[in-house]
Image 1: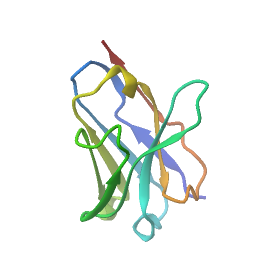
Image 2: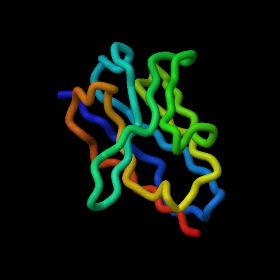
Image 3: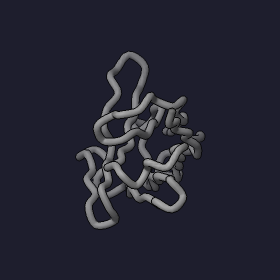
Image 4: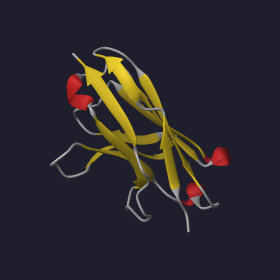
Length: 114
């Protein structure tokens, strides 16, 4: 059973940067469009960014221009470079396929202080 392991979260000040990583066990990573999601308490999980290939990425309006999604298929790893972080970005960040095919990992907490 494939499993996601997210890492790289932490506490930063507003305007700071973080890079999240997500490793998928198994050898199916390169078969799928991948995505980052986030969730705050009491709210539904929301899509943040998605990637088919290096030249095919998409971002939700609230992160466009600040976040960059990338992937390393050889390492089965998904990345999210987050710049100019805002307190509203505080959430637990998760990765999954764009179709949410696999079970969710534990996520990684990102906290942005004002």
